[in-house]
Amino acid sequence: MILACDEVPAEPLPATGSIVGIDMGVRQFFTTSDGEHVAHPRFFQVMAGELAEAQRHLATFPKRTRRRTKKHRAAARKVATIHAKIRRQRLDHHHKRANELIRDHDVIAHKKLNTAGMTKSPEAKADPETPGGFLPNGAAAKAGLNRSILDAGWGLFFGILAQKAESAARRVIPVDARNTSRTCPTCGHVAKENRLTQTKFECTACGFTANADHVGAMNILSRAGLALCHVA
Image (cartoon, rainbow, N blue to C red):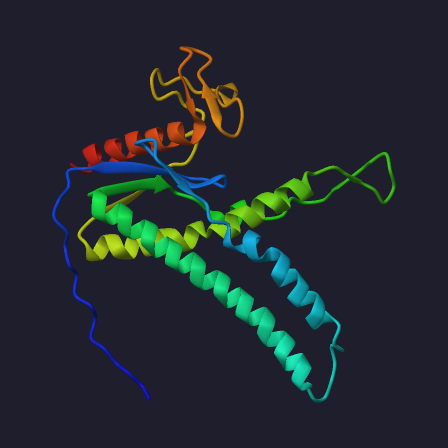
């Protein structure tokens, strides 16, 4: 059976007079310019143990067989079922968070991110003093960060947010991501040293302190405001 439906018409929402910036993260899913932290559910991480066990079981079967056995098919279905569950959970989470943003704000600003580039593995660097050896390149730490970014699904979320915004007559503004977490929202001082840790920001010029993700979101909001003024 094939079902067809007409295009769903746009349903503009009443104006709220609110504009917000959001800073995506790996510790929190995102932080708003109002200081709200939205938790990162880490669906893949939660299911990682069960998935690894299912994959190990699948790997015990011969790779090349003329006829798949019933047990082999069941093992393959188990792996596929876990992946599908993770995708469904992530998609549901993205839709709910996007709906909340669209409902409460007329304009939502976020960093313009190249998630494909951000999740590339670091290149191996040969050690000139050790033939056949390589210098440390932080590959293990980068792999962990990549898993967190992919688990969060930022690109998928931005796509859903943009679609919902268009339907509801809201506006989504991607802004330049550079130095959003290193710029003081109070005095404008920019320095790498301003960001003490992954979560703590302290301006070396004026002493302003805050959560680093909150600072990022405030700067994103500021840049979106400048973009709106430019358009106007």
